[in-house]
Image (cartoon, rainbow, N blue to C red; front, side):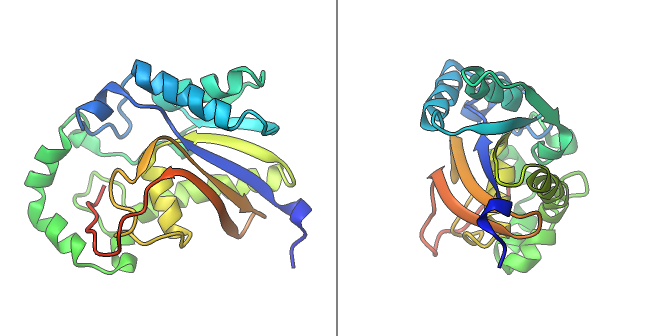
Length: 220
């Protein structure tokens, strides 16, 4: 059995609300500024985590995540280190489009996706420009494992995106795709996960909304 002191405790936070979140516009690697509500959500999450002693703070290099990380880290006087590994899924040319229009365009593939097993959904692409869940997790989990090894026995804050956090929880067995549909992870939500550099254990979630098993998830 691995000793508890060898576990790193990872706090993965979703960024605050953005202008494009309000209009249900696909962001991916394209940025949109935090709204005042988003800033307040980051401050609320900071209060929620105020008693946690973080050894380091990492963030997606996208502005919405970095700004959220800076708000949370400000009172702790910690610098924020950014990384592409924590970025949201890329949507290529479809970034900037309204989700509803995207779903209409790929309605046939989305319907096919909804009938798949969780295993098949993990590798599925609606089109060549969009990262599959497997590709997304390859880069995210690699970075989380490296971080866990570097900060054994310590707490680390990582600010990322809703798609990243949702797919990670699914991959770790916290819930299935239908139990964590699109928009299940609120702005300012977080998951507390322990890792020894290999295995992951979900210990707590905040503002992550599980649906009933009969609910049908949208792909992204």
